Length: 365
Image (cartoon, rainbow, N blue to C red):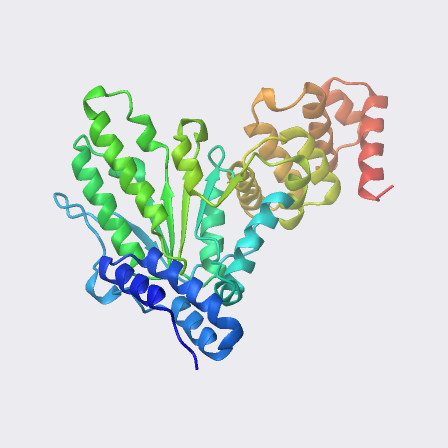
């Protein structure tokens, strides 16, 4: 005969009465784990319930939150996201993101073992390196809506009001399976220069810390920040996974350009020139080059070189690299080596050497 201990039953009821989804889930997983050997069918059914959209969540009774004064929505909500192409990341980042997907896919197995899938992540890195893209990609792969809260935009001079706004957002996000993105997560830390607000600010931070602790395992909370050094150590400890996004390496830039149908040899040379650029900057360059190619009936290789040369900061590369790109650009336009040497005021042998190296790279030698 299958039985649940008196302590388990009391604990479950206590968490239910308090309305603690996280506490209920924790005790529930422990019960499922203990039942797995003696009553595997029941354990499976209970695990399914813990993974379901229902349970302690009452989506129908919670409406999308708005600011009490302006009546403007506090969240940006998007569903059924579609990507034209799979994003490209460094291997280490890709591995961590796929680990999140694997844990969600195997969530029932984890729950039956008394564990739970990843609930909270923090993304760090400068602007334009793919933090928001990764959050949207995860939501798309998990077939979940993504709710985005820009903490910088909801910060008010009346911090008590900010706390109320954030609490209403968290309550709404907890009511439905979703990915909640807390953007500009460091905005709270940036307000610590006002001594009058320190007490209220601490209460505001506590609201967020409690929200992370009680976040349900049926959803994912992601915090994104450009300034990880500004976050309190207590905040870091709350997140299960930290992923650092960096500027694109030359290898990644080559892959991004190759995906855009830019020749391998040109992509390789450009990667040397703009290594350390952000993903968003690279995407803008590609888009601009594609438009130029269509509007001016030019080759894409020629246009991407033109865009890179005209838009790059001089600190991004040496003068030699810039000269090499100009030589390639003029060659693609059909100019002879002698004419290129004259145009750029360089020796004819130098032009020949650069173009020979380019052709060898193009031919894979």
